[in-house]
Length: 93
Image 1 (cartoon, rainbow, N blue to C red):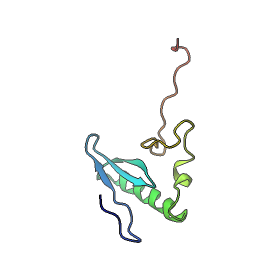
Image 2: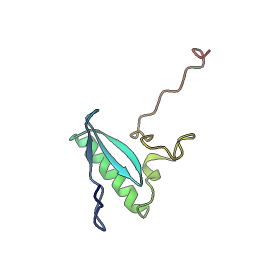
Image 3: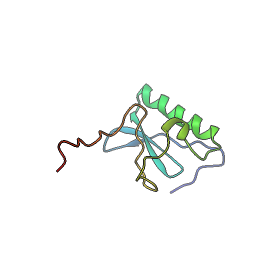
Image 4: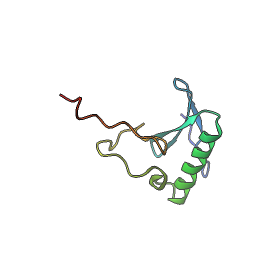
């Protein structure tokens, strides 16, 4: 696997199985939306701007803090405006 040149930005890539655009920053993969869509490009620009503004260390300004229980795991971040559905307490048991 190649390395980026100094100062180069991470590339937007295609997740082939889902057709989603993705980017990896600091070892965490972020899904951006449908590959090639204007929304994916906008999300890419937001993440890159936040990453550069934080000194290339974090994008929490855009994504929020990591979810409890996901420390150290990858592929856990979701696009802004989406969240995993909370389990229904009535159906548990």
